[in-house]
Length: 111
Length: 112
Image (cartoon, rainbow over all chains, first blue to last red; front, side, top):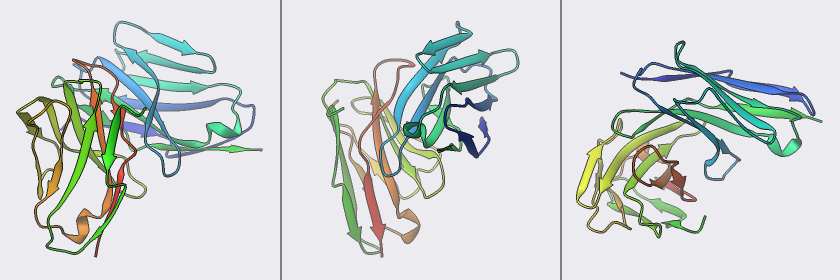
């Protein structure tokens, strides 16, 4: 079946440094790629998304890049802050509008 | 987002019991979804619905039943609860097509 692979599973960075999380998808028909942040005990919240007709999208310190040929997309967080500590999930759309989810990346920001 | 609410927030029940988790959204979104999230894992789709009276199975639908008689409500029923169904359950909704999914606060279900 279709799947999304997400790496790394845990990422520890120094406060102020950049963090990059990568996802690879298998369904060539996928055309919508959201990223969610989930803090401990809370619900997943959308932080940024990108569609297949765009290669890059930015929102302040967060950016997402998409390479449709290679079937991978990445989340970039610059100037990391303690409040960025959370689990981040990537997802890719299927033709029936379901999302296939990555397994998540636990981001740890070291002071 | 107060637009999607789940109830109860916490539930403890026993194996073999029937339990229903409620989900209500006020956005008139067409699509609604039920996920389960187990400790240390991602989200797994149980059921989804594209509109009222239209539902379809996800990857982990065994043991679960859904209905959607009204656009705004999407209850999930565990017909005969098992310990393996202990999990956090999230409901989500989205507009037509590939739109962002908005999640409720979740129901933490423990089956003893």
